[in-house]
Structure formats: structure tokens, C-alpha cells
Amino acid sequence: MFNVETILCSTDFSAGSLRAISAATDIAIRLSAELWLMHVLPILPALPSEPNFAFEAHAYGLLLQDDAQKQLDEMARELKQKGIQSRVLVAHGDAAGEIVRVAEEQKVDLIVIATFGKTGWRRFAFGSVTEKVVRLAPCPVLTVRGSEERIAAEQRLA
Image (cartoon, rainbow, N blue to C red; front, side, top):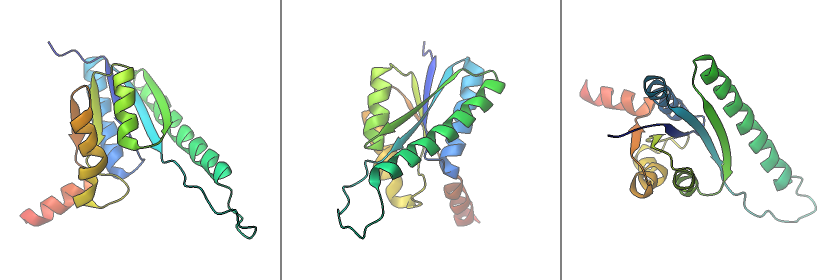
């Protein structure tokens, strides 16, 4: 029997990934599973040390991490109100690699992920993060189509 006790859902806070969280929430409620919410921050490139360059990468990275943590914590509060146990994770690096790493290390039972996120590049996004996760994950992966994809598909059928 396929037993789901832990669900990992990654988000980039886009409309598509919020649909994936909604699907993961429904599954968690039905199966009394714990839901882990994860956001992966990219590694910031080294910036020039030019004196006129006023941008500090480290400070910017901390702001991004703090913002992601706050958004995930708010989502966790909402899940708690629905009776769902949750954890939040903010990771750094390659999104697909980090999702798969966490799933392996924590022995996650199911990954729920959107087919595309903030990039909006419908034809490329599934071929990147989601495709890598589906291919490399140590557990089943449920892909959730983003809202823009559904609208585009409905327009093609009309």
C-alpha cells in the first residue's frame, strides 16, 4: 500500500505554485499528512567590486531569505488553522537539486510541484525544474498545471 505521511511542496510564490500548494493541502487533509513548504533561493552571482556599485549581494540575499521565510511562515499559519502540521524550508542553490536532496534526506513520500512558475516560459519551464524533479525524485511526484496553462489550453479548445 502507498502510504503518504509527508508531502513536500516547493513554491516560488507564483500563481502556478500556489495552485500546487492548494492541491498539496487537499491531499494533506485527506491523508492526515504533514506538509512541508519549500522555497529555493538561487545562488547570487559575484558582483563587481567597483566603488560606484552600491548594491551589496549579501544584504540582498538576506532580504530575499527573510521575505521567503515570512511568506512560508504565513502559509504555515494558515495550514495550522486547517489542522495540518507543516514545516517550512528555505534552501539555496539549484531548485531541482535542492528539492530532490531534501526529498531523499527526509524520506518524503510525495512531492507536489507546479509545471511552471514565475518565468512564464511555458515551453521551457516544465523542461527545467519540474522535469528534473520528476526524473530524479526518490518518490512519486504530482505535477499541477499552472493557471496560465489552463487558460491557454481552454483558449486553444474554444
